[in-house]
Length: 129
Picture (cartoon, helix red, strand yellow):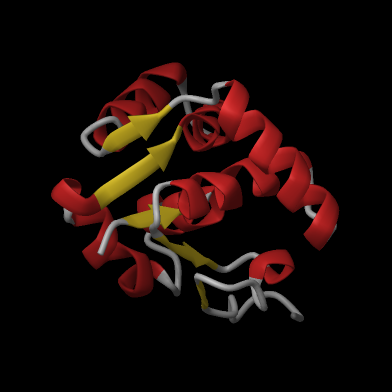
């Protein structure tokens, strides 16, 4: 089954965080990996802030080994509808809409996505919820 990883999952994987093992199999399965373009934006920005542009470019290259889904007009409207219905932040709505649109499972450690259909959630041990 195709899989989408939310931005926090990518960061968890690249930092070898406590939930790395949850995300790793899907990330390494490039054949079934769906990458919303906004996750590249969020992860690239985070890595630039925490490390360097060179590291961010290297990580983006890894992410682009999956199938990158750009935000087009149809996906933007679906993201707005899902964001409104489920009260999601903009990026979370786009990521969730990409998963629904591509008939993919979404792996996340973001509690805002925890109860949504099609989401496999794992609580981050360092977060209160």
